[in-house]
Image (cartoon, rainbow, N blue to C red):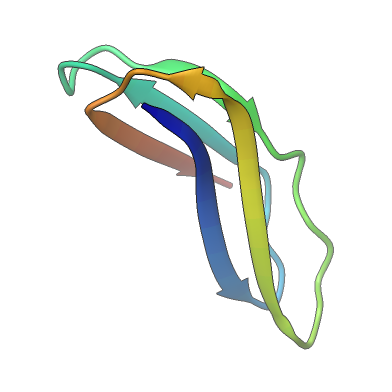
Amino acid sequence: MVERVRVVCSRSLPNVKVEIGLDGKHFVEVCDSGGYPATEDVLDAGLKFLPQKARYARLMIG
């Protein structure tokens, strides 16, 4: 079961979408961050969503 993805980066972080799946071929979007503004500090973004059964996760950044 997956309910959160943690993304750590510096500078800006454009829109991030989290997709999960069971077979590595078919994915379902479970979270859309909407993006984060630029910062001089390290950004620690916790993307939470309802608990889902998953074997694979994919981040779509940009």
